[in-house]
Image (cartoon, one colour):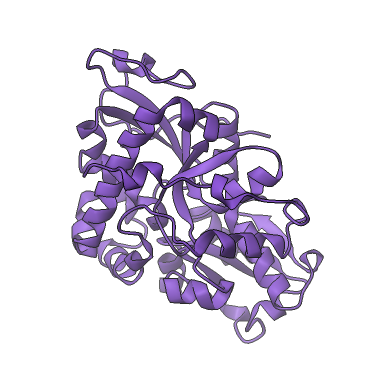
Length: 348
């Protein structure tokens, strides 16, 4: 069932959410002249405070949306699959989530595309419960285990299934348990509702600090992702329905301008500088110093220009084809799952 949790966090609605601009280019109308009013864009993020998606909030905190004449309304949905559903239903204009959804959706006859590629690695870690660390040493030991993912049909679920299959298991050998991220993931680990699970920062650091879990597979870096997944794995991105992109090219270009500028800002500033620009609740669970340390180790996953890595889409297709019966046996046109039109024309 499609969740309708579209009420944005108060800290997110920063630029006149109640103004008349909210009626401009809201859900599906084409770009038109608006007499100087800001264009409203609704973007749902698959976990707003996850480090892998921080460009979405950072662009707002740096004033880059406003600079482009955009009133971007960010809303939070912990599971990327639910954000995807909201976008397909027209409840939001675009999603900040994983690129792999675009391949999965095309195989189901739905056309979406990545407009700006935020990262070239998942930024995810497979954690195993500390008391099981001696028994679960690799994905080959997943058989019969309950494995935490953000949601069924989410990118963490995709990756978890692939790791199992790549290590000689069948999808039916494991049980995926939807536990989202943050406090719910931590509680599932602490109460032994899951044996292992895939999550991102700052949840990773929170569990490691409590000695509740150990790192089993680390995909926070490009090299780590290549080792685990067999190649460059483009992950976090801004994606939308292709009909929306084609009907809102001016808005798509403005978003690309804002995000490419944000990605370049990330590449030229320290983890401490970046953290200083984010809301304090982003690191309240682990402390600012731990957040900075984690970001410093992982910020290399972000692209500097928003461009899709050339070898990335094929790696993602290979991963999905290993286990996803929807993708298996279908012709997927990778060139239609992303566009570089807007990032290459970005004015920053």
